[in-house]
Image 1: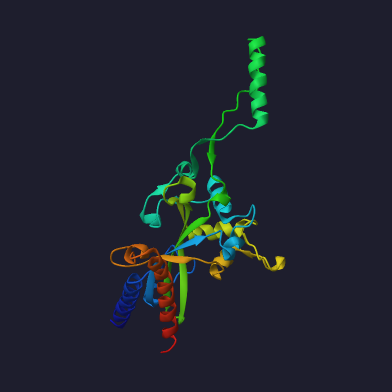
Image 2: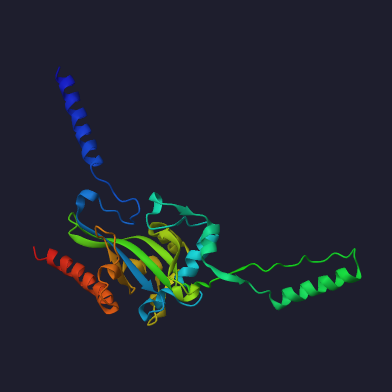
Length: 279
């Protein structure tokens, strides 16, 4: 009878433990996940990052641009591409769809002088000898924007406070490449979104993925470390709200007020973090 009662107690304890575990979760898209039961405060934000800014040029050094690293990884099949920052909950894109998004509109790549000479030689050869064979004509393919042209990134991240460790985190979820309006003469257009967790793996394995330290060549860092250390400049474009509205739409009295709203919200979140340490 005692053995039976002990068995029931053990079973009950295991069931309670499993029940408690199922009440929470760890975000699968986080590089360093925090259990939901340990999150005291959380706010989702959207940031825009202009790689032309002085502080961001370290992520945009010649032939080592972050956009080049990402595009090359896509071409090699190392990255899954998403349509939006909904990631696995939304639609994914094929490599072809992504490349189509960064194609220069209404423009085909020009043939090189060497390719033109090949075509002229083949044409002349075919005219003099109908049985002659030669190198096939090289068709001009689509022209794509260069990585250095794609200077806009959009970062989706969560600002959260972990009560277990008593510290705040910026938890990056996704990075999106934007085709700037300057290139298509219309509006900023998303080319593709990438799970930050996947990007970290790409950055760590690619020796080109360097945050270039302009002051000390011995202190270049991996791009993943640079994001961890917040070695970039950006501004808020949206903070989670019931209408899912952008700051520019909420504070649309004038352009200046919309720009200032980004700084107000950033300072507001910094002040909240500071006040947490007062208690």
